[in-house]
Length: 124
Image (cartoon, rainbow, N blue to C red; front, side, top):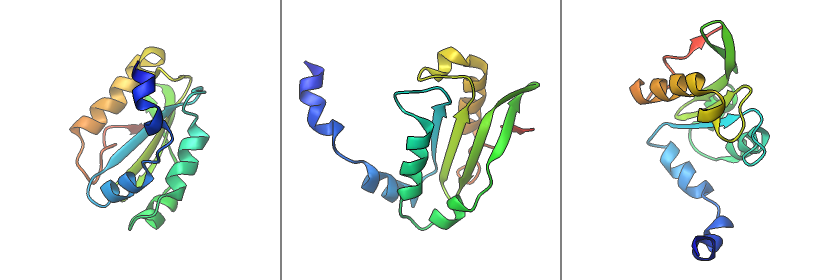
């Protein structure tokens, strides 16, 4: 079965790959606030552990609120190719739990520029 063939990959870190990619490409990590499978604090711990040329810029960036219409959708932070986004009131299936907010985020990332992939998120 699939698990049998992929089980060795589960314990392999992708950290070196992410660090290398960050030197050349913007990466956006997003988590649902209520996600127990991929918890936001664990993602943040991973991101803080990365070593690349933009680490200090990312670590020193401010966490910003973003809204969709009049609703607080979540928070984002980022700098020098690394961005993290928290989507409020969403679990592991962000697109099911908060479809409009997920669409807003995905639209921003896909229409953004490499130096500002979150350009379309409205701060509040």
